[in-house]
Amino acid sequence: MQPLPSLDTRASRLLADHDVTSLAEHIAASSNCAPARARRAAAKAFHHAFAGDHKGDAPWDDDALRDGGIGRWARPALLVLSPRIELEIAERAPSEDGAERLLLRARDGALFESVIIPAQAGRDRARTTLCLSSQVGCARGCTFCETGTLGLQRQLAAAEIVDQYRIARRMCEPGTPDRPGDKRLTKRRDAALERKDESPSERSGEQQRAPEHFERPVSNIVFMGMGEPLDNLGELTRAISLLATQQAFAIPPSHITVSTAGVADKLAAFFRDTRAELAISLNAPDDERRNEVMPINRRFDLKTLRRALVDSLPPGRRVLFQYALFAGFNDALEDADRLAAYLGDIPARVNVIPANPGPQSDLSSPVDDRIDAFVRRLHARGVTALLRQPRGRDVGGACGQLAGARRKGAERESRSCPSR
Ligand code: SF4
Image (cartoon, rainbow, N blue to C red; front, side, top):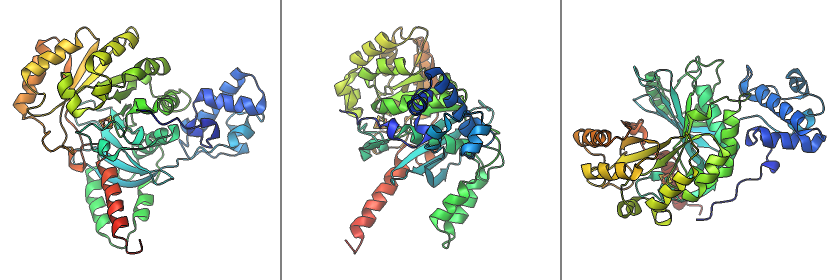
């Protein structure tokens, strides 16, 4: 598969499409200043726009940038860029378990999702995880995945990735009405949806009110939403660079995990371009079964994937393997043995995830006893394995369900429109 080309950041008018390097180049090109000076100005600009008291609503004019310590020589280059969030929330789907799925709309109407996953009571209380999308749709076509049924519609730009985080950050601040995890939201939202006189755009505006400060900030980011992140590597790594920039969002790269279906020929570039963690979605212990559910395996089989990983994994780094359990397909104890043998001495841990309901109805989650036995067998084979329960099942457990439903609804409407 040929990935779509990355967007041309030099043509972008959005600040969040840049990282420090590209913004410094932009400033230097228009002011002829030394690269190091341009980098300092870029860092100050990010701090003013994204990390100061305003956190996204910073005034952005000559006086404000001067007050932010940015010299006159750099300000014209910055003022042609916009620091504003360009995405809007099209729909919020709060789950009973506290997770909340967001359907986001880009300026061109493209729809994609992110999921805010607050910590469950008594466990990792300080942690709020945000699951981000990297593409609209996906070309990889995994049979258990709703997003795979959409095909690839387009890449997300770096700013569209970063803005997913900025929206979630606002929503997690104390004082925000209807913070994720607030059970009252479900009732209020249902009541709002029943009010026939309230338009979706009015609801959307109400939901986007911005608060003042954090209480439970987003602490971890996972790229496990829509899309194959390594098929959009340029935009992905620039977005991660900005998210990790101390003067901007200051998320440690070790708190950012990128999940791939196994694009083996991009692993070296991934480890070269970012310090984020890597997760590999494995889901089957041999090629025959992996071919069935993950077409990418026909391009990069398990042996090729393992070789590419071993060759490119930097010293001291670990990899997370994800293994979705499907009843009667990959959940036998012998499959746990095969999985352990495949991992061998790779520094790795495994997340075992009971499958979410997806488009392939014969792929369902095993019963609890079988799941526990599988995890115990991995432990017995010396594998560090954790059982991870999927969150947000009641609001579309698999990424792509909201966007898919909206898209199919729009197609039905356009087909039935009498004016066509
Ligand atoms: S599981 Fe990931 S790679 Fe596979 S189709 Fe879904 S989004 Fe794409």
